[in-house]
Length: 634
Image 1 (tube, helix red, strand yellow):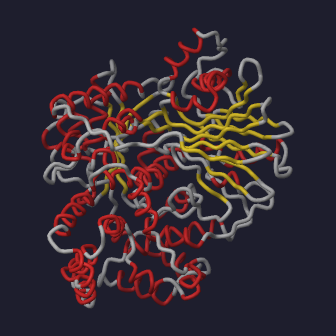
Image 2 (cartoon, rainbow, N blue to C red):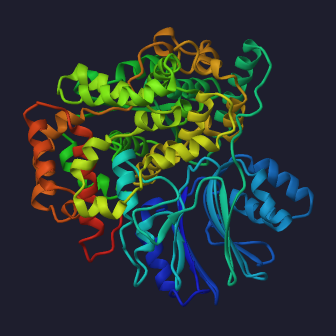
Image 3 (spheres, rainbow, N blue to C red):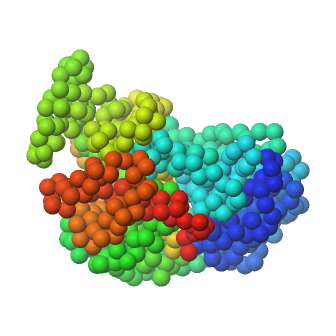
């Protein structure tokens, strides 16, 4: 796991080796083991190394092919590199190292752009062809590894994190207003947007070719739900267990200490079970707990740890949030508000004290339908089908408005239900996903913001993605939507930044391309079965996990956010929101923000989600928009 950065001189001179070194230094935390630069008349490449495979000096990057034609900087892991290396070696490629990095170079020399189809892993890389003068930049299928690029009429640069781009001179920091609206709707900014107008994310499953003549972006992979298997449930369950076991074993290859995150949920528990059953030594496992039992899952993690006799480590978040929050948030280069970033940081910090690589259960919810929102969505769709569309669209909005006049929780739920039922399934799923209601947004945003946004609405991201899905049923379409939006934009960003903040590599076997593609062939009824979420995954893990782990109520990686805002981080939040208000006051009506804050403090309402989002936006603003210093995560 590493960090990469670079630029081209095609549009204008972007700098020298010192410029590249500054870019690399800004993401030092992604690779503290080594750093290097390459520059010629056309491109500059920088690399920070976290040594995992082949710890020798031979693995240092930028790395050149055996003939010097191709130069690469690479971030990630290629899990099938040994098989590829054997094929390429048999074909005559003279390998100098035992790294997966050199395999990418050899594969590109053999197949060019088509080589991406053969890579199975998590990665971003930039590969320079010194003869044809083309720079290829690619990102893995699911978006495990990040890639940002800056493009103006005079500049092109790329990096693993925005902070590396901000080290360059004369970088425009114009705010993209629709991304601000997106952030408050989703708590993250979806690909390919960033908070900055001239910076973009390369979408997962895409690559770009950059030359003096053009910049071309192409998609090389997508997941299809169109080909449903006709095999029986028993056979499919056995295939899933075998596949998940194989992909977990693939991720246990490491030249440095390796362990696992263990939350006590199905996904991480299943991964730990498969690791333990395929390891000759006890697996190191790490869990995070809270004083509030409502959010504490450590007792369930302990059950699995005891069953498999892991070397188990726990950390309880007592009063650690206030003292660490500014540091933790500093690793996000644009607004990001998933509150589980806090325990994710702490569990990564705990894991890094014992290992360099951690295996996690990420992806199980999106790939096998594990979120509670899928239950909500299923109920709403069943109700939707019982009423004529004309009735839903004419009558239900009026009923929603009627219930909205009351602050009672039961009426708020009724308002939400009738509003969602009045919409079509795609828009209904957006409402289920959204973290802020239109009614509240229209009060919060000031008139200038509303005027500039015009007719733009964040729902277009959800609806457009939903409509691109090739599945024939609703569940397939919403799983596709989450795989393309929430997973890469929210979950994987959180895990990448918080693990890399601690120089820890995290691997996710349930996000292997073969697992994802296999899941997409399963009938939806095997993923969401009469209200049972992750049905087939539970069936697959039945032989290795206790019943109480498989069928307990899902907690998720939640935090006591409402209590934090009324207690531990109250003063910090008030300082940012009301003393340093010249960030959010550019976009929002501060009187409304103050009213929400007061209602929350008096426990008249729970406004924790929107207030936390405001706080995260403001903390980002003051680090990235008001300081003259170059932000970095050190």
